Image (cartoon, rainbow, N blue to C red; front, side, top):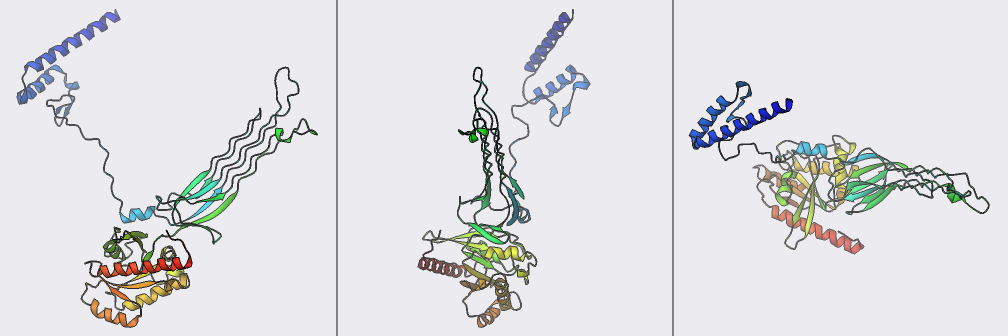
Length: 420
């Protein structure tokens, strides 16, 4: 009875579908077809089943065009300078715990009709070590977590089966990361792919098979694995660049880097626009490349860690020569140079004595020319007047930058130092 009722209902539904499709086929095409289709839908379906949408009835397409929304992947939004700063970390304190060795097994061979099988306990596996590796594709220490625990070795088992060794844990850090322990430098990772084995995994324990001898044919002892090495280290990232732009906030360092290189740091009219170092590459016709770093603005008392002083001064240590960027819109620009040299020397003695040049920025201002002559009378080094906004005299700065770079290479050649 139930089966016959279901077949009858299915037959009626198929008949209704055929009559409905046949009616639509005979209604014509175009706008008239759309109107007739809508009227037929109203008559064929009860009000509870009619769901209107903006383009008519849902589930009915009156044209060949597809009106669905595009579900393609949305375009990735560029992060702002503040958002990038949140992800930029140049120092970390990390606890490293290597894996412990696995336990040795204590067992004896058991087999039918073999009463004295002897010991067959296998050794435990060694614990995993932790290795720090320099990677040029990593730009920050933000992905480094506070604690790393390597994998432990597995315990041994019967039938002389050894435990599996724990796999090594790799920590990827940027090129230029310094590893320190209690303030002392342990290693400087300056090459891509350079590795440092920070902590060793514990050795696996010995099973009773290891202690089998002529004097002891049935050893009953097994040794547990050794604990892995523990260590607390500090990771510091220092920018790798040939030249460093050093100046007070809002001196125009970022604008100058944009004018002479391919870097595009954020530029604004307020101080501390740059909150992390940017590195730009200056290319020459002979395919030589010079890396220039935009060091965030230094304030008075930076060597006492005022503001983010030490975090910024850390990135100047690797720069082989310095470019002091002075703001000629200030009342006395030459005092900026004295303050900058004082902060550098207080952080690291003789840091301000490296090869250098003085860049007088914002020469497009009316009062800049008068202050330029006064600045030259107060200093003995070469002063290069430029305007990062208009690009005035940037060619002289680029040429002088190459002179400093060539002098740096000649000095390394005379000392027998290999440069990359």
